[in-house]
Image (cartoon, rainbow, N blue to C red; front, top):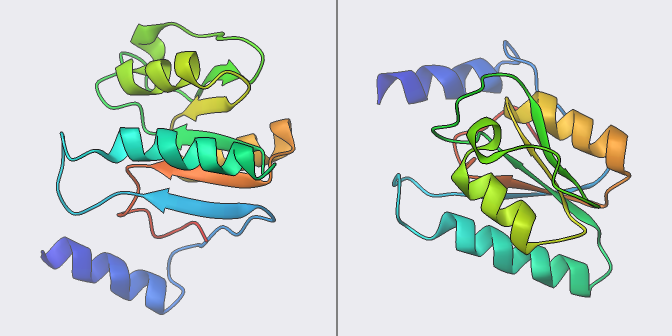
Length: 135
């Protein structure tokens, strides 16, 4: 709990950098971990954004993946990563949401890459309620 308050303090007084993007940013998350429906919610919000012609990209940390580097799971045309590099949930999202770029890695770096590489209009951050440096 103390780490949370210290982190909020650092952002409040501009001691940590905040990244801003030209696209909409939708953060899906909650205070619980695991099994609370965050990934299905990302899938639902993605479908809604697609229906509204707001091309989204999904950014995830890729929980339990074997790689620590930034990985493009899907470029929106095809899956270009494997499940070990991507993590199971980002890989599943890439397989089920064809046409949507999916990236895993540190949130702010992956978000920047998604905006720059794919000309998106909306950025979905999976399991990122604790990500305070993106707005």
